[in-house]
Image 1 (spheres, helix red, strand yellow):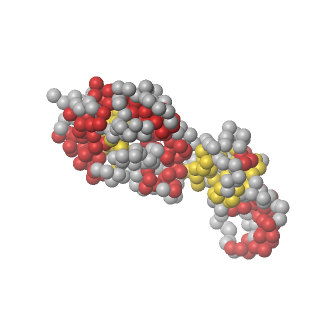
Image 2 (tube, helix red, strand yellow; image 1 turned 90 degrees about the vertical axis):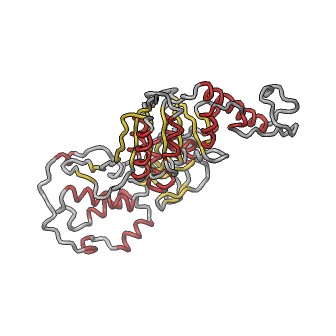
Image 3 (cartoon, one colour; image 1 turned 90 degrees about the horizontal axis):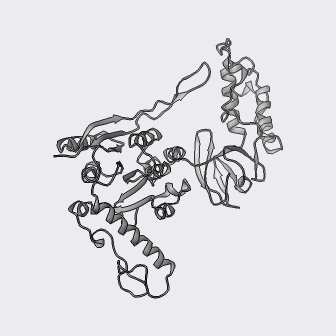
Amino acid sequence: MIQENQWVILKRGQVFKAVKVKRNQKQQFERLNFNLNDAIGKKFHTCFTVEKNNKLSILDNIPELESYTLKEDDLKEVTVDNSALFDKAQENQALSTEQILTMQKSNVSGADLVDLLSKNSTNFAEKSGYSQDKFIKKKEKKHIKYFTILEPTPRLLAQVYSSRAPHTIQYLGTESLAFMNCYLNIHPRVKIAVVENCSGLCSASLVWKGAEITQFNENHDGCNNHAFEILNLGAEKTMNDGKMNQFPLNKIGSLIAGKSEYEDYFYLPQDPETSKKYDLNNLDNLPGEVTERRKRQITNIKRNVNLIKSLTSCPEYFDGLLICTKFHPTSIALPLLHLLKPSRPFTIFCINKEPLMDAFIKIQELSLAIQLNLRDIFLREMQVLPNRTHPEMFMKGHRGFILTGIKVKSS
């Protein structure tokens, strides 16, 4: 069910947008202005139409563009073609532009307007069945003000980012994300090391499938985990539940060297009550009032202490490694492979081939892995319709590369 203060995905054709459901908040999507008050309490995958007063109502007839059901004529072989049609542009339509605009402003519904346009088209009956479907889909998209509300998933979120801001996820596609998750054999409670600059999409997809992750970030204030919020996981809640930790990327050398002090890895803040640094051995019996700020700092310190103990007691701690970053992968992958258990998989994504070729050669020279494979990810999008299944006319020609391998213990 759609609830208030929840993130949802709006879909119209092949256009997606992630929004947060708030009462009386104006939303804009594909030239439609509305608020989501009337959507609260309804089921996901419901198709809504926008009324004249910007309110929503459930659409009775699903537009052809959103429908997955086949009509009786769809499976019949078409015998009519368009070779005898003569394109007269606007003359083929009996309704004038002024009449169409007048009906749009009146109480004529979008579905009725599409029906009138098809009936008043002089050559509609002479078209082939495929052309008639194409005509109706085009008019429905123009005249019916509709959209569908979907529940956020990593696949849908990747499509949102890819269509609106692909650079924020390093041009990572849904097929690449799915391949990396499958190759890492994600299952509940598996421990994965992640280095990413993808707005938290890679990390959120792993947590979504039950993995426990450790983010190695280069910023002192952590990673951008916007994807956790859109998937309604919550970055802070995920960390409090023990499903995610954060570790400074520039401290991996200290970890490999075997250092175990807290301040070798993390900054130890001052207690706002005493103006002195916290005593790690006396975090549960602090003098004075325990404010929200102190409680949050103590929680972070305890989480970091437990992480340091786990990593220093067993250096080869992780069951998998995923890298999708804007930095050169070689300098990141080589030290992190020392934290990976033997016979465990790793994946590295990059939009360009050359950085991965360099990482391939370095890893091979150091005998850190076997079954090294550099893959070119290409997904051919297909139009699947009765009697007219073929590749899409327009698709992405370059989808990046993935380097995979199995870590081995060097002698």
